[in-house]
Length: 424
Image (tube, rainbow, N blue to C red; front, side, top):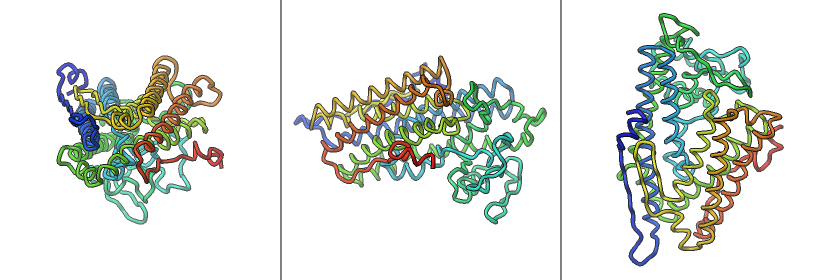
């Protein structure tokens, strides 16, 4: 079901109303239940929209027109939204962090997958598979092993080619591999424009780019694999799923620590640092998260909204899903209302700055242009989000102190903590 039909039909309604205890206290287990319910709703919608993406890719493969390519690209952007709002579940939940690389690994050396422009280069000292070009080669030799790639299957991508040679940039699966297949390289650098792969790259009868049947097979395998991987995680967050059991086994204090670790690590090291500040320091569009589609502003915004969802204990989804229950904010407020108000204010300030970045991306210039060298206004727009994320993280640290939780360490980033090292 596509997004418009989902919204019109109001499908997949989920309302959780975990209650306060009768004595007026906020119970830790209620906070953890809400946290799990939000995960179940968001991963469920990520799965639904991934299935819509798979169907759109199938239509493109069956009839490779520009209209069907545009529809597949639109479905990819829709599918990104609920998934990005789940990223706050990383870092604190081992079951998510161990799995996440299959669906959202980034950045990727796209020459592993398909043809690339000459400006990409022919080799990399860090990656011997830099231009392996799976689509062009039915047989590959990787690390001394000959791999039969004559039939491109989900199993081939996930078990043989993902992180080939134990190199993280060899990303063969997930959203970004699909993004590259749908858009191709963005060769505009910090000028206007996203990737411009033609629909004929998937058309065996009027093939451009060569190997059109294999490219279509890769797209089919990658979208099917994305659905299968999301089915796994959606099931894990159901009431009796593996992720819920893992959270329960942590105990209440460690469970709360997992929530705060996810919020703080995504806020600081991952989003403010590796995804935003690094690219701004280098003025490098290759450090843009959704670099082929120019969708980065939305991915960053949804990360921010995901953090707010967990803090407020509230999720309003894209297909009618709704969760509302006892929140981390409620728990912190019971201990120190001023700190709870501070965290809320800082998170809302971050959302405001991220919305401003989105508005600029939609009316002035794309994110890769914003981080370009010499673009004072664009740089300032991005820096404002980074600054808000850093301030938000400091407020989250005060919430940790209020709850007297030990052993919490947020992910760091040289881009924030030691920016000089970025240029060494």
